[in-house]
Length: 358
Ligand code: PMP
Image 1: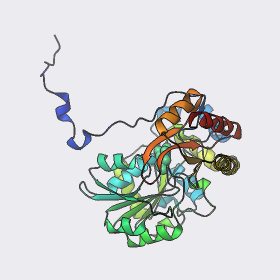
Image 2: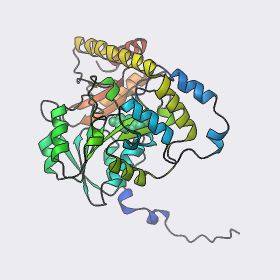
Image 3: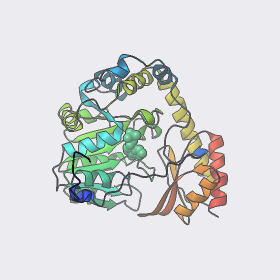
Image 4: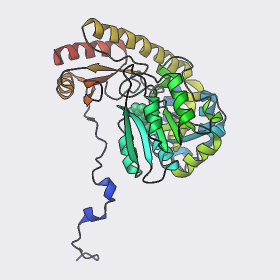
């Protein structure tokens, strides 16, 4: 007989009430020959990071990593053009965003963001007991600063370039939101390396009281599997994110490989970013020449209108190309998001899309 008697109680009764309607994150992750579904770097592992990982054994594995990733912060600070005290790291920028939202709000407060944006925002809102207020984009494609400010939100999230639509917010709009917001503004720059040079607000953020800029090594740096994200802001803001984040979030091996990539692979990253930007223009032109509607993109993906997103993605997958379907996006309709990679992959995507969505 089991030493603990079965109480017969309902396991679900113990769940936090606000989590009941919350699902697990579930993008279709079945392997696919050409996977253009998750906006990662399709050119492989940065060479120095790969070597650092191959050499790993011993202390980086057996001991705890640095509590708040001090060495990694130094390398990230140098890359972002700020002081190490202005940087907080995390287990992917997902972790940084979640920790930041929690650090600057209480349960019941409001978080405001544009719709459509990064799909995890409503989830982070619910996980932290916040009320989400969404605001549609303006007709000219920019974020509606006035509507966001009118919410009086405790936390405002801007994604620039925006996932899944692709365009960066205008500098004037971001300035208006940061200047007028009642609370903290988080600008998510996960895709900033693919945008116009100098579009990043990271270098400026430490001198603003309420601006936190979140970034990641998952996209341009090709290290999504290592889960290294970071944010830049005024040292007191960053310290609060660190409190809510907790210790030891970046693993020792991830820290070593990320430092190697930041110190020695910037040229590798830059060359592949340039190739993505060139392929993005070529791919969008080919799609538009074929009569398709493609949203302007400053990121490493494009959003393409289709008649039926789920059907088009399934038909493309059957032809060996995975893309991310977005049915019924606000202001857009049905669309698929296609990551930009080496040109032969884009040719496969063009052919598959042509057959999948006539
Ligand atoms: N922000 C945006 C806009 C994203 O698209 C993603 C990944 N899809 C993330 C943050 C999270 O990336 P990671 O946790 O890998 O840093």
